[in-house]
Amino acid sequence: MRLDLKRGVFIAAIVFATTGIAELVARQQVNPDAQILADFMERVKAYVALREKVDGDAPKLQETKDAAKIKAAQLALAALIRSARSTAKQGDIFTPPIEKKFRALLRPEVKGPEGARTKATILDEKPAVALKVNADYPSTEPLATVPPGILQALPPLPDGKGLEYRFVRTHMILLDTRANLIVDFLLNAIP
Amino acid sequence: MPTRRPVPTLAVLIAAALAVHVATAQQLTLPNQKDSVHFAVIGDSGTGGSDQLHIAQRLTAMRNTFPFEIVLMMGDNLYGNEGPRDFEKKFEVPYKALLDAKVKFYASLGNHDEANQTKYKPFNMNDKKYYTFKPPNGSVRFFALDSNYMDQEQIAWLEKELAASQSDWKIMFFHHPLYSSGSTHGSDTSLRDQLEPLFIKYGVDAVFAGHEHFYERIKPQKGIYYFVSGGAGKVRRGDIQRTNLTEKGFDQGYHFMLVEVTPKMLYFQTISDKGATVDSGALPRRETPATPK
Image (cartoon, rainbow over all chains, first blue to last red; front, side):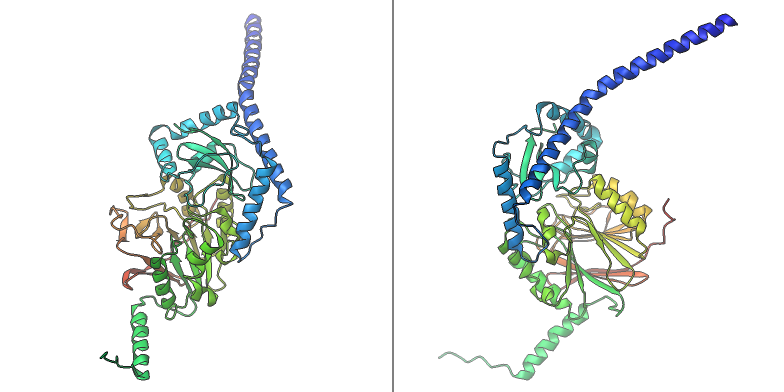
């Protein structure tokens, strides 16, 4: 009886230790991904901060019945952003590790019969847009719908800041909707 | 020697005007009750072309007999460029008479619309891509959604607003149809998976969408009425592949809708560019759903 008790305590200790090790290993496995996503969020935040800084110099875009004012404010904001990040290039936000992570997040969303529906929704529109950082998204081209499942799979962008994930065929862009400007892009984001 | 055309007398002119007026008045199938909510629906309108202008004129003329104060826009409000001239040509000029008469347009964003349209005061979006409003008369609440980008923030907002609404009628409008028999686009099932459970849970009565350049009335789905109305500027002839979803379809011309909501009924009339009524009817309000948990 005493022997059984000792054995039980020993087994429990082993189980506890093993679980602890497993948790530690799991945490180490999760951490790199979390770091990558945290890095992405930091880069997005830095962009928002830059825009807010230059936004102070742009004419305030208030609700108006004068469409000319809306366009003028949009173009002015875009010009200020371009000037403030004139050296920006593809991959500044979607760095290679972030790119890899995003592809991994997107892949399951476009796999299988459900995924085929999602992909069909994205490819329902085939905008012809030259992908270039800091370029306008041409208003002559439609915007492809981003299926809700895709938005749930990706890290949420800051609320109310006018940043959106969008697709140009199979490529993904980060679009600043206030300036109508391509912030960065990820080639062949979905297979 | 050129022959002189007879000059019409004043009486002839009045008679002709009356004839036009009567013809228009006869076309109205709606009850046109004084205290009900009257509105019009236009979708995919913003081409700036002569067809948009023509259907806009018909819509304007119908207001003489059916005095609507609201126009819901299903998106694709401006195709192509969105400079100041485009707002003029694709919106302000075609609907000038209605704008002058203080009719309020409420826009939703389509896949051809820039987000900054929310800043354009005549679209009454209050600088929001999704919003809700309630006309002063009648127990009707409208919800405009941005179906291009249904993120968690928007879904959470919608659920909160639906839960808070005490209105008898809850009416949705947005660009992409959850149900459609269009061969070009068809039903947006991804969007449906997200929205339909909320519509059912909170007792949404009717849903208006565009995107497809035709008219389709869908058979009620889980007790909800669905309309596709995307032909106020473009038409895709022969695009409806009639399925078991279709209650009524029209893809042979441009159209707009007139809608009247009374406490118990929603009446609708869909009018083509030729002035013909292509669909009309009366739909009872849904039973109040169980109290949401």
